[in-house]
Amino acid sequence: MPDTCTPEFLEYETVKRYADSLDDLTEKERGERLATLEAFAAHVERTPDQMVEEIFDKETRKYRKRGFYSDNAKAFAAQIDGPKSVQLQRSNIIRSFFIANGYRLPPERPDWM
Image (cartoon, rainbow, N blue to C red; front, top):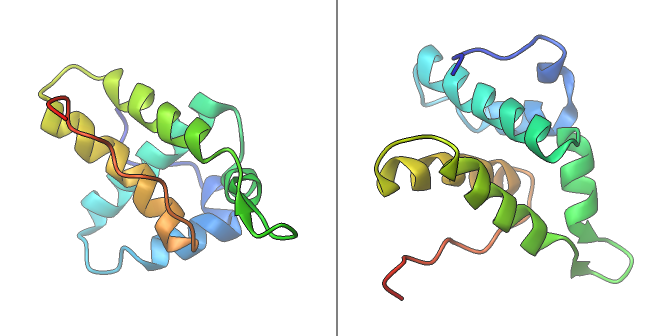
């Protein structure tokens, strides 16, 4: 998996907001997280701005498509080989993107629950 993303991807307003929340990370860690987010956006075939726009209906003030993104974050993370903890870390990158933009995805439930 690449540890950098395309310059065009960094131009999205929601990506800029997320990138600003990663200031405490090294450049390599920051690049890996942004590349993971770009891969997820390709996975769900949406831009980051579309993802944030459609997760919450501002008129009704209710979440929409939260299950869609939560399920896809889990499926996206499961694509990589590795321990469950690594997969969870990958899906948490997607969750942190939504949090940085003001919305929450439900946390992933452990298998034993």
